[in-house]
Image (cartoon, rainbow, N blue to C red):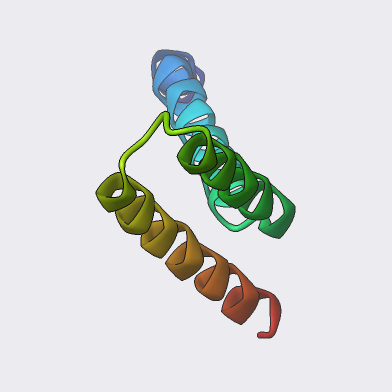
Length: 77
């Protein structure tokens, strides 16, 4: 009976494993300091070439700086 239970639960366990991996990759991307700096540089470039407004620039810059601060805090633990 246990083997049958294991076989029936296999797809659910695989799905949970995939979700854990996706969450891990997303967290890595959100806390990757070099990636955040690259995004800040790209944002500045967009602003300097008048592709985004000052309001959008300031809002997105604030979000990225907060992410950078959080990433640095996590690395300091």
